[in-house]
Length: 254
Image 1 (tube, rainbow, N blue to C red):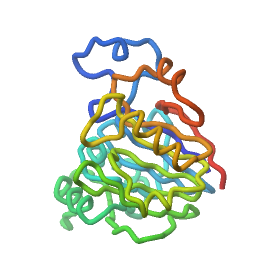
Image 2 (image 1 turned 120 degrees about the vertical axis):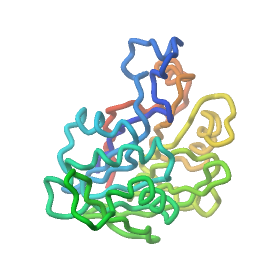
Image 3 (image 1 turned 45 degrees about the horizontal axis):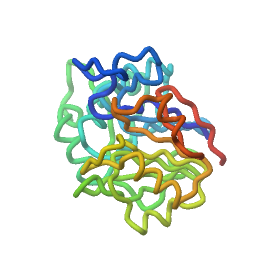
């Protein structure tokens, strides 16, 4: 199984508009971070995790031509804002693209992109989407999917376990029952916003504490602000943790 980091940045991306800090003006491509998203591929099945405003750029960069499903973590704009750019995928297909999420997230998608779900014919193109509620355990093609509850400040959002890998973004707390489902991982993708505290996101040190407790074989931090220089912070991080970067391909044990 293979996971590609499509975007490792926070909601404003990096460089941040109008910012001239060292990270935003860095020549290191690892410091150029699109909004958080990932792609999971195994045995002919391709799953997109979140569809933020940078979706078009991410799909073109990675030369993605086929999607089998979209799974959503939550309904914030930096995670669903690119849904309209799914049009080329469904224009080339005879079937709708399944979109998985919790009831609130799917409700927001149907509200924000209401024209997608109107039954009347349209003179313009629109993505053909089919919203599907999450089940405790299910499969998409050849990939097992287990949705897991995490907290984004006061709000519950969805993390996912895919076999021996897990993807968690925008979390500030992981409930004990979810922690138990995150053990024995080959790869953990976890948000680590910055070093300073934030009410809605793990800091780097909080993420490190999670890694120390769960003990995955490898951990990659995502949803990163311009507070973190890639090379500098990676030198400071203890194994098995490191900062993820856009375009990174991670092989996962099946």
